[in-house]
Length: 186
Image (cartoon, rainbow, N blue to C red; front, side, top):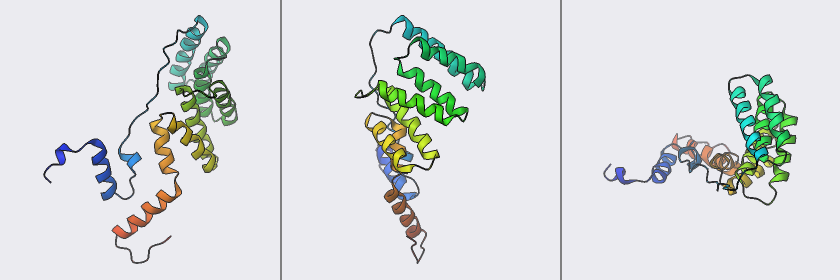
């Protein structure tokens, strides 16, 4: 087709969603995260916490959870008002299948970031949404993802679309129509 080379990524995503009824715009076009950055000076304890958490995350990524946990615990301990430390530890708890502990850390992040449009808050809401979804609490998960999406999370935007029951039903019906099914199932 002539002129397709001049289409934007968003336009290509729309076309793909038309020709692939199981795809959503969120699946085919990722606007990415859009967080504002904090340029505030960090205290010595926040810098120490950041370094400890970075080491803990590296160990967790290597599957060394039991070695990572004390570092993340210490990272939270030296800077208890730093939300990112709780987010990091919550992620480790999730990997360790300690979801209740993860929820406690995520609750703490949400307390610390109340009223703030921050990356830490958006990440906590995303993690919370994943945990809630795993527990089958899709309405609560959708609410968490919706708030994170408002804060700029590209991942959360995709999850909001995926959890929209009307969008899923429309995709299913459109797919059936395009396959030429005579009896459309609702």
